[in-house]
Length: 223
Image (cartoon, rainbow, N blue to C red; front, side, top):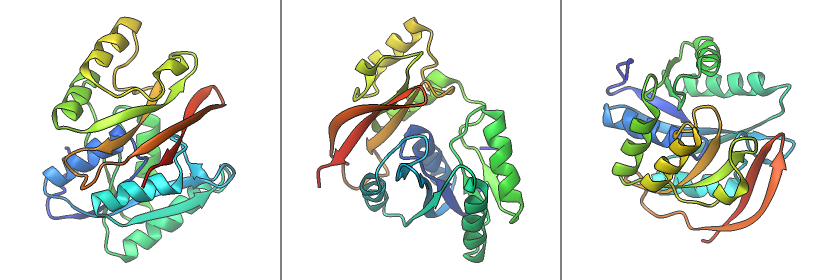
């Protein structure tokens, strides 16, 4: 991690997937003090941006992680305004750092850093400049478990939805020429267990639906 976060309070932008989860783990491992998770929901579809997860699943993850969760609803038009409003609230709670799951996606990292800087919050990217295979190997070796919940249709077919991340999948993706960490949005995941979790997230796969060239696996939670 390029930013010294030891003993510093931080929020983690939480998607529910492997990127933010490994970033959270690394930030804690470096001595950072997690204060809360932060998720943005699409006001139109009533689920989380990018991963399309329900509130029940996000809340279940936060409970298992023993961290508060703040969910803000935003449209595409007021996304930045909503994000900034939440940052203002975090700053009032004396949170000076934000942890993000970005790797080498420059545009995304620049945007996060720009909005955070407006409230003098430093954006941290624990996964930046890491090799994709090394990231996924570390994630699995640490004992995290995740399933694929979204695939970019032009890259992977829907047979991958619901599959668990494992080392045989790494080989499969490499043979297809797909980035194994999904750095370019080839796939998204849901983390269901691991060293930060006190309880496994039990999910029930349902139907598949598509939005803008990406197929998503709808999920229910089995409490």
